[in-house]
Image 1 (tube, rainbow, N blue to C red):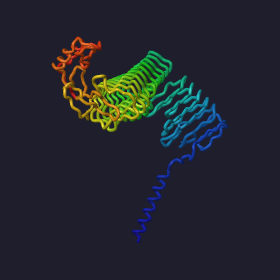
Image 2 (spheres, rainbow, N blue to C red):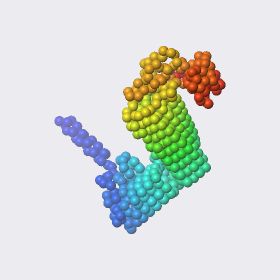
Image 3 (spheres, rainbow, N blue to C red):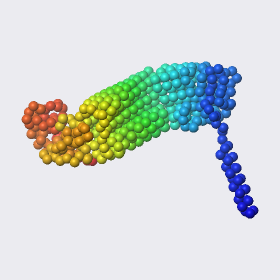
Image 4 (tube, rainbow, N blue to C red):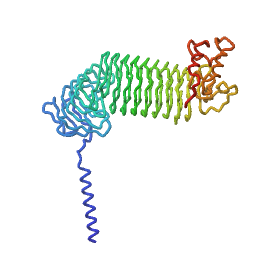
Length: 484
């Protein structure tokens, strides 16, 4: 009995101790805290003010704050503003001449949210900052750790002396002809001819962000673990993004919107959460070539964009290979390896039309998807694509299937019997040899109107005639064999 009583008492004591242990924590506010337009403070006793101008934290706060009063100072005095992983720490909406300083802000989507607010000062804080439609603010002396600065449609802001993970936050507006060689985050607004090279950018809001910035080169950078997009081009033209490693961005590896005549080439894009490369809404006349794209939702996604050239990319083991949707049109897709996608090798839907898709290798993909797609072309007039599940035959040995590859309402009229790899492999037998030379020699000096014309041999400029340049091109690859 005594043993049982002692056991009960011990258990009761442990329960009481655990209750005390897990309840010794700061008391959280039950609702959002407001600094009202009349100067009053609602929702906490941890902010004090003697004059309704300067407001000071007197302890840690565990909720978000909305400032509704202009021309005040909110001084955190080093205290903590702690969230629960959502929302904004401090919101200024339509505010002017507010200073936020000396505040440690953690566990919000953004620590400070400026929404259509101007003439404010954000200084000496530890917090991520979002600036949306807000001009002429001063953001200085802040430290960003595993986050950064996000700016959208905002201009005339002074952004100086900030650090991102111990490195300079580089914000340039209306600048030209500079080289950036040290940064933790790069934001370029209305700039020209900037070179961003050999940086290691990680654990920030966006890696390299261009807004209305042209003729800029982004090369040789390692961009990893970015909360948003690794590289963003918005309303920006004639830029080059090449030779970068862009890995594990939460959104897109490279994102283009209303951006034209850019080149995205020779990058390694791995494990980006949304798409490897996104061509989004009027991202027209761009070149996407020689990239290696793996482990994303879609390798390349083209949404309502036109006249892009997508070629020589290795797109492997994403959920989708290439997708065209929302009237993506007049794009050229050729010479790509599109391999091992669990949902789609290629998808063309939502009214996408006049896209030309040929000389691609579709290998071991789950399926294709054509939905409400119109008038797309799956060959160059004589050769189409290689489909690893094509079951047709080649009775004349020209490397082209005798029957089309059917795609449930559309078709590849000239499916290849083997992977496309080298234009000099005229008969598509995976080796450049005497048989290819003989075919070209038999069509030598012919044009499309001649009976001996063979379009498979017209592989070098000037096109429209089989001439010495075609023969030399074959000779330069003579003896080469396809290597998977």
